[in-house]
Image (cartoon, rainbow, N blue to C red; front, side, top):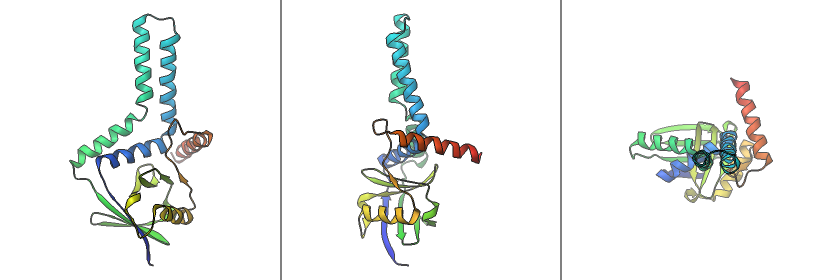
Length: 192
């Protein structure tokens, strides 16, 4: 089979953080929403509850911390990976063929079928091809040859039968995102 496209990623600290934040917001959306709602509830309690001034301050502080740090677990995971690697960040190459993908991570080669992909997420800089909640292939959109990121996205969507998603944030969230989070939560419970 002829190579259709080759994409690579030369990881940086920013790309590692982007990967973990995207994974967390993709697979832990329910937790993100619950944490934000708890933060809002604490802020509201701090503003409107008839409690001493010091309690209002603590409620406001706790609420703000919860709301602002709703993806804090992703930051911690990214920092742990960066610390464990001690600055030796990987460079990966993913070759997209018409029937499969081949991932080269250092000296290791893996052949992946498009049907194995669970979720497809694309942001401004990267393509994230999730094989599950803990495994992803990441490609820098500017390092795709001989085509464009859109051509790779079209090929992967066609072969996998999946649709590309934009990363979810509280500002871009809609009912479909919440339903997808609920469905994936139910799917995890059935597997357990």
